[in-house]
Length: 150
Image 1 (cartoon, helix red, strand yellow):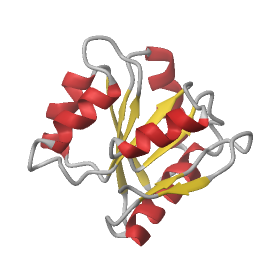
Image 2 (spheres, helix red, strand yellow):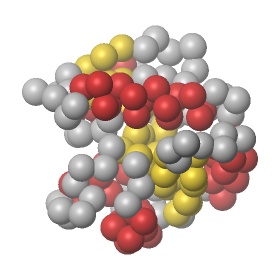
Image 3 (tube, helix red, strand yellow):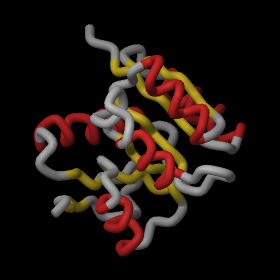
Image 4 (cartoon, one colour):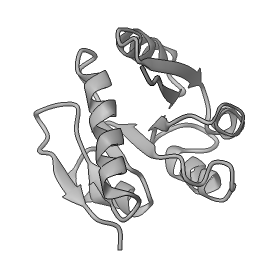
């Protein structure tokens, strides 16, 4: 059994707890949480997660800024980042993908389907082999689509 290492980054303690409970239901996921983009930079470098789930709107260093810094470090540049956000309009989703995100999971998300959404995004990213990005949603209220980076 291969365990998928997930780093979750969100400034809201309640969201971190919900994600911990949700992903904790899957024995093939290992989770580490951070409360800020700055903490995520060091955790990602030290722990080498398979994927990073990151909130978009955080104080001091938001998700897109953190993604940019991750891409600038050789040890973290290739780690897929999935944004979790309430900003789930079509143009915003495409913008997050254009920044280099592997996908977007809209908030509020379904805790019972979060692990599956993470797995689908990781599988889609592996299938794309770095040539594009998959846009997936944990919630059927939002249509799933594929968006390629240019």
